[in-house]
Length: 255
Ligand code: PGA
Figure 1 (cartoon, rainbow, N blue to C red):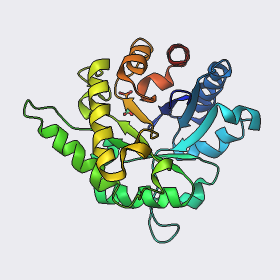
Figure 2: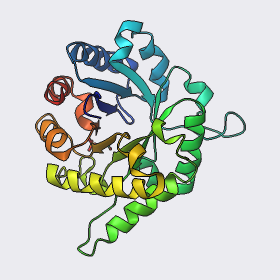
Figure 3: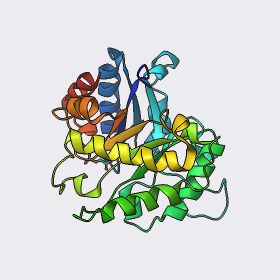
Figure 4: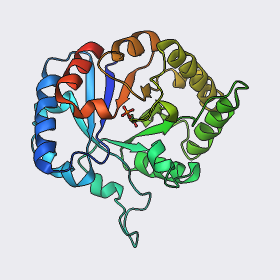
């Protein structure tokens, strides 16, 4: 894993409001990515911007920059108003699944499991998000996390596992109202726990090859510390990925 590139996912969520702004942010990100040696960036814009933005990426640039979707449905087509399927995401390599903001709207582990299976079968790498709402002193949150992981991965067998990317995102550290980002040592602890849970299912050998990312109030100031001392293979960045200068700085620091 040492020689592998770090992964930074830019989760734009429901931003920006216009394609014009989206192009501006994308072009700036493209410039920032040019000089990176050890980092790969995956931009996840709203669905409606994907095909326009893809046209702005040359095949040469695809090594460092890729696109991902923020969600997808598990069926390929049919009467599912408002949903997007894997064949519709043909140009993409990644898809975020089970983000806490979607879980908040009713997405269950069972739904995430179906989506993860369907995404892998379609050749996509699912970025599976896990994270507790709050922490307690009895370690209940660890049980909660274990259950999320076990249930969300229950259709992914050992053969399919190498496609998976794990994103640990404690809900209390995400978004504007967040208390704070996790400290690097806390990130490290939790990744060890996640690897232990995964190893129990799949065996240690394969699990060491699965990237674990951290997300939640990552910014240009804390990114380097989280990568170095949190021992994660990358970051999932929300707000800071829309701020052109700060995101460039963040990428430099990660690299
Ligand atoms: P944030 O969001 O970086 O704005 O906290 C992270 C996420 O929700 O993925």
